[in-house]
Image 1 (spheres, rainbow, N blue to C red):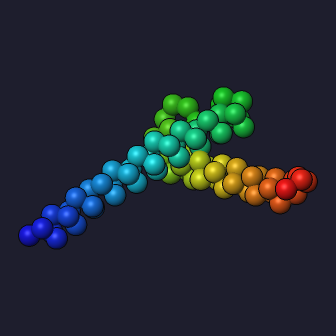
Image 2 (cartoon, helix red, strand yellow):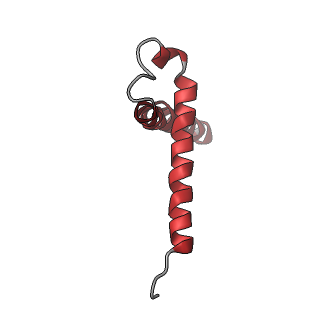
Length: 81
């Protein structure tokens, strides 16, 4: 009985975490990046609901680009370590 309850609790917590990260963090990060790139024209209105997956994918792309920028900076930075 206890393993089933712990599996259920873990599944619920995982789904809540994934929903929070995907639906909130990545969506708003992608939306901010797209609004900056398009000077405030996209995404607005009905396209927010219709293109939610694409907007979240743009958030993933922004995170990957930030990570690549940090990696390149660390690689090419000349320091006195």
